[in-house]
Amino acid sequence: MTSPSAHAAAKRNHEIPTSIAENLTSMWFLLPILLVFSVLTIAPLAQSFVYSLTDYNGYSDNFNFIGLDNYITVFLDASLLSSLGFTLLYAFSVTLIVTCLAIPLAVTLNKAMWGRSFARSLFFFLGVPAQAIIGLIWQYIFSPLDSGVANRILKSLGMTTIQWLSEDNWARFCVIFVAVWMQVGWHATLYLAYLQTIPADLYEQARVDGANNRQQFIHITLPQLTGGIVTSMFLLMTSALKIYDLPFTLTGGGPGYATNTLTQSIILRGIGQSDYGLGSALSTLFTVACIIVIAIQMGISNAVSRRFQ
Image (cartoon, rainbow, N blue to C red; front, top):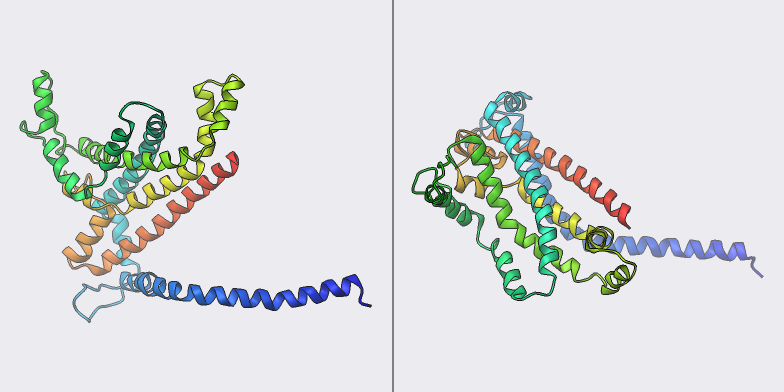
């Protein structure tokens, strides 16, 4: 008769090969995904890093190894530093403002009221058109000339016109404003989906206990929305860091380099000016910066999620 310890050891020895077989089976299913990811992402990134250490112009096969010269140029070029600064300003501003506006909007649209379905559709479809089209439309609205829609409204009210797109700070404001206007409805719809999964019993019990609307929002709604907040902020941050079409069509990156983005600088330097080595160095630094920013954001989001669980 075998002892209980011997039986347990035999059971563990039997489970180990089974576990290995299951892991191998999972790896076979993941292999095509890993292969595609390696070919389309890892290999181009590695190649771009190699080119960043050369004076490759994108056309000739004759290029020289120049070490870190391209990276030094990036940090000494005022226009590239301006692009980095505006990209980070845009990413953090849009993420924060959209989050702060989308949650109250979603709570409002979740209430029973006349025309609720129409209001939901209206806010959602604000972000449906392509960003390039929206940029061109708002370029006409924010035209610094007196014929611009915004300036014509100001003149009709007896106010001084504003150089919307021809002054640095106003141009930055316009780009961020349009981005928020375009995305707040879509992310409110995302939060609305999470709100509809919150059990109504939680609010009924809170009302019985004497909690007002503010207390219900802080202690019930926000904790239940942590998953949606993490998802929404991740989508906002990743899309904002690689933004190109909206600032390009709205301001062309100007005035000067005030609203120039990193992606625009990569395309302009790497392709437009045939400086592929410098463009590759900029894209490598951009990739590293994105990884760092997203890692920090996900770490904060996970900490907040654990706090409310």
